[in-house]
Amino acid sequence: MKTVIDMIKFFRHIRRSLIQENKMGKYFKYAIGEIVLVVIGILIALQINDWNDQRKLKQQEQTYYCKISEDLKTDIENVNRALVSLKERKITTKRFLTNLLKIQEDKTILLQDYLSAIRAYDYIPTKAAIVDITSSGKLENLKNSALKNEILNHYSQQDYALKIIDKNDEPLFRQIFSYGDYTSFGIHEVPLYKDEYGDKLSSLLKSSEWQKDPDNALFKHIKDHMNMTVILCTREQQLLEDIKTSSEELFNKLSNYCQ
Image (cartoon, rainbow, N blue to C red; front, side, top):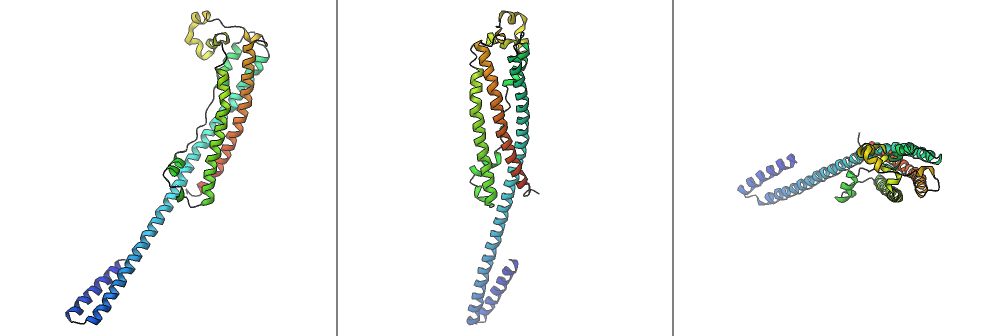
């Protein structure tokens, strides 16, 4: 570009000399040459700008891939935590159910597992990168169509799986809050809450011996609750395993763009 500018200055100097010498024929020839050089200079500048724009877009595309990759890495860690939590919850729930069906004289053995059987660890995906890309209209900057479609499909399938998990969790939560008589159940005797009530208040809040009678409505209700917990935890485990597999496969592909 500097060379073109120098040549334009050179032609301008010649034109001035030709005007002074009154050589108009040569003047117009050099004027045309100067115009051609100006046009060439403009075209070169535009080409350089285009190259710079393309380079910036390529860098931005790579940055987006790397950000999605970072989100996926976090997701894989979180889904692993959720799977560990689910495994422990299923073990506890099956132990609770086994002890319940064996008919316990003392329900303490049941209550010590109760909270672990109903407590859930929710997997919440990290979607900062994909939300930024889609909400800012930068999706078209992802030029690799196959990879872009795989990214979109991953998040779409993940959202669908999480909706299923949420829908399945609803009846479990409804069952927790439909026991009807928490005092008879002995909620105040659950180890985590027992100290909060104290011996005096706990003695006044007398619970029933529902765990001794399989025909008791509360016994049946809790049995069904724990039974469905095992089933739905198994289904959630399957869905999270699918999310984990998809996340790992996509993470490995995107890692090639973040070397």
